[in-house]
Amino acid sequence: AEGPAGSHHFERPDDGRRAQQWEWYGLKPERRALDRLWVQGEIVLRRRDRGFSRVFDLPERVAPDLWTSPPLPDDERDRIFLRKTISALGISTSRWASDYFRTGGPGFVPIGRTRPLLAEMGAAGEILPVTVPGIDEPVWIDTALVDRLDALRAGRMRPVLTTLLSPFDNLIWNRDRAHQLWGFHYRLECYTPEARRIYGYYSLPILHRERIVGRLDPSFDRRTKVLTVKALHLEPGVRVTPVLVGAITGALDDLTMFLGGETGSWVVRHANPPEMGSMLSAAREGS
Image 1 (cartoon, helix red, strand yellow):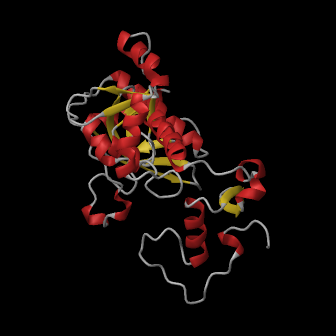
Image 2 (tube, helix red, strand yellow):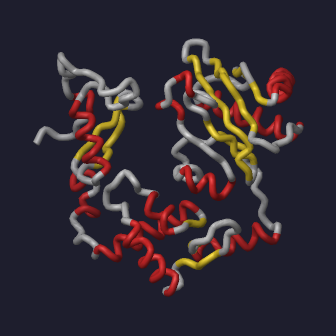
Image 3 (spheres, one colour):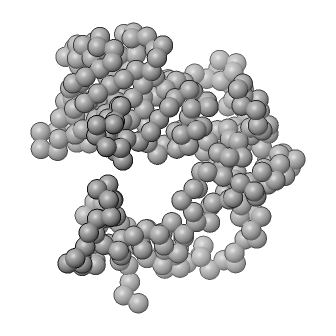
């Protein structure tokens, strides 16, 4: 009745208390309610105020043409979401596909429905089975990606990007998948008591070409506009080379500039192995 609204349109209760130290919904029950309605598809994001605060509205007011259409049959809707999931992941098992929309809403397909639907989609030629060493369950690829896979295997395409991954990136969103595919054990340690953390509060995996080669824990000072890498850890077996150092230097420059800093406005406090830190510092000074 009152139009678009966000959490900042509601007053904070005088007796509000955080449920946990890490409680990211803050003190307002309205924020929790809005987030749940958004996840379930009952409301949608209309805009952001003040650069970040989300403002929600009813779907029929944001996209009336879409939301006045008759709903799809359950099987058709689920197949659409599963196809989008497999396309986003590249390859997927039934478990990975079911987990993709784990927060709920119309995109979530329970594992009991995912398995038979993927088999039907495979029989229809929408997706194809692939073999992945070490994974003893059916793995599927979107048929639209087969040409790209063939090009990679033939050497006509090569991964060249080095970047830092969000903890919620498609590549590592499912932690079991990351471990099965790359042997990469990853946990977001901001929920872990400081004394028990291994890699840092908010460590970001380092994707170097086709491999996850390590992780680093960054902190950006908005006053000085300097990015501090509190800790950087390479994965076992990863060699320190000038190519790797140069690539990670570029990734740190990218993150610093994205946050509002300048090229080279970063420092590495701790690195494992130590020579990685000294070589990164030298590369920064020489850039």
